[in-house]
Image 1 (spheres, rainbow, N blue to C red):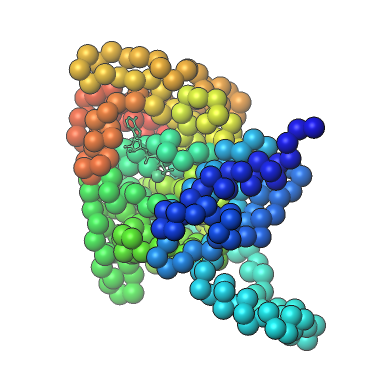
Image 2: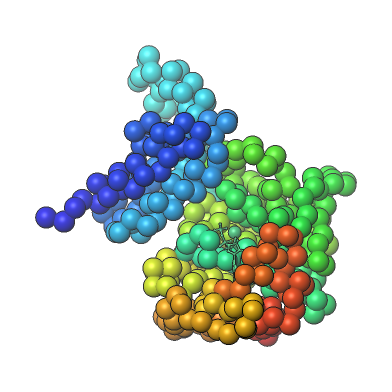
Amino acid sequence: MPEALTTRIDRALTAVKNPRTGTNVLSSGQVCDVATTTDGKVRLTLLLAANDDATIARSVRQALEAVDGVTDVRVDVKDASQAKAAQAATAAPKRAALPMMEQPAAAPRVAAPTPVTYPQLGKVIAVSSGKGGVGKSTVTVNIAVALAKMGKRIGIMDADIYGPNIPRMMGVNAPPPVEDEKIMPLEAHGVKLISLGFLIERDQPAIWRGPIVMKIITQFLRDVNWGQLDYLFVDMPPGTGDAQLSLVQATQVNGAVIVTTPQDVAVGDALRGAKMFERVGVPVMGVVENMSYFESPETGKPLAIFGTGGGKRLADELGVPLLGEIPLYPPVLVGGDSGTPIVVADPTSTAAKKLTEVAAKLIA
Ligand SMILES: Nc1ncnc2c1ncn2[C@@H]1O[C@H](COP(=O)(O)OP(=O)(O)OP(=O)(O)O)[C@@H](O)[C@H]1O
Ligand SMILES: [Mg+2]
């Protein structure tokens, strides 16, 4: 008999350790209420303490996404202290915790809001991927800066609530000023940007549950003084979680760009991510294959070391164009770490040229 999905899920969760306590998230009870559907959807609650590293949420998600048979992961993050208090409050008179007919339910379901169009944002483009670490943020900042260099009015909204890294890649990090009750976006390399990274302390854990994610995304769209933009790029967290859902519910998203790496496994994840946008009526504009091959900074020679053609296969499967194949080129990483995107740091490199081509194709 094949091993049960739940066994594989448990094993994956046991492999995720809380760096603070050194224990795994399953046996320590930090992960609870794990629910699985027959078609591979997993939903669970993660209890985060104030001094926990919020990126555990991402590690849990990534561990589950890698489990064979898992099609969708939803992690509901809860404040550990509040969850305990709530448990204590409801534990004694158990039945009273159920809402009675005359009373409104304690947590009424929020009806999905109707997407609002914000004409000043221009076209809203989500940059997404199935898997983490494939280069969404790198692609986002470079196409944004490339378009700004072409004279377009560009904004970036960092919607990666679990690991906002746009500020580091763009070399800015300061609390954005507030003027006339509007948040002023910061500006770098000719691009306006907003990120949760500006609003939270670096090591402060982010306790972002679904409704809070929705609120933040709506605020970033509505309460930030973007001025008039031609394009707003939204850097998404990996996968198909709260941020993706919130974005498409909050505003009219004009298109999505899917970033993938050449390996098959990344492509499978990316396909699921792309289908999610299609299901909610957001057209996929194209696929960017990142880290397609290795380009040596010394010799400039290309080396296909990762397998090839994943981006093309994904694009074909979706019936959309392959917008570019970006080499793995170490200076791209250096540029990201130092706050100078490669299209600025080394505009004549192959990587920069290809990223600029992607930008041009996107607006063509
Ligand atoms: N073409 C490239 N060549 C070299 N390094 C790259 C390239 N693309 C991305 N990187 C590096 O790989 C790392 C991951 O990239 P990035 O942060 O853009 O991925 P991501 O998909 O946004 O990740 P996450 O899911 O964590 O948000 C970064 O350190 C980045 O500098
Ligand atoms: Mg990122």
